[in-house]
Length: 236
Image (tube, rainbow, N blue to C red; front, top):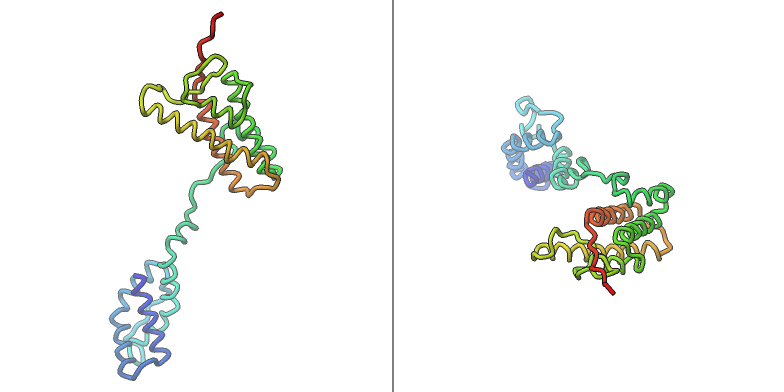
């Protein structure tokens, strides 16, 4: 379709600029007559055909009736060329609601966020996730990234070092893979998101900060949905 309207517009331009002999101009007008039904169908489908001329009532060559189509062909060409971009603008994807993030995240980040402190909001949310994980496992000896390394470890729990299990069973290969993925996520979030949020000084772009809050929300749901496993107590 794009080639058809582009060629039709080019033919009109050639005729209007007299780019050719009289015979070539005549052939071009005949070409317009031949191609007009197809081009009109394309223009109509793109809502770019405001009128249809009557070639039989035209004083000169009937093909001259279609010379006014050039601007509409150019608009149609643009629509066809950029149709994917146009569709993405006219039909935006789903939006992310910050207030529906995990409560650990939004309850701690909301007031800072609403005051425009996006980086600090992310830092606060990460801090609450760390504190909630400590409380869940009874671990106050480590925090933040080191806590995630210890808590979500694939190692068996020991006395004073409870683990968080997200896999239903560690006996299967898929269970261990799930636990490994959880460990990678937890450590990655604190290394890549929490640390810069806490130690940087500049403000963060709102969209990027919101995406980081969403990632923290994924982690919070994973932790809250896991189960704490304590190691055997040593007997003296």
